[in-house]
Length: 142
Image 1: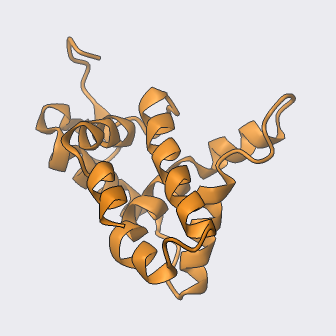
Image 2 (image 1 turned 30 degrees about the horizontal axis):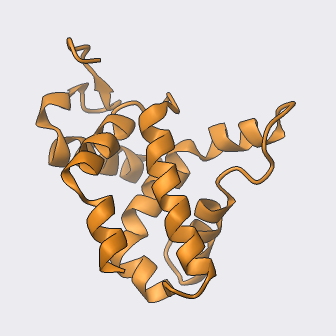
């Protein structure tokens, strides 16, 4: 469990998570990488190597933040022609599992706050130009 947690919170992954959180309207390479890692976690949970208490303690906020931020885009992709109906089903299952444990779905205001925190925590150079929308001012690296 600690290995998954450490990898998900490594400096490189924190920057990836920051960049993903900074662009909630765009499911790009960074969001994809976050979901790949969350799908790995889902496989471990499916195999019984991670239990619901571990999910709640270590990964509750990131699971909810990333699933609910991109849920509608992922669902659209699933239903589009040629879309993968199994796309990120593991992440969705973990989010629903947390709900069954009494953890409420975050509001849009909570998601904005969490995205802002993700941005500031790992990549202060990606500080949103407008904290209300989490839009990032363009930089030379973007």
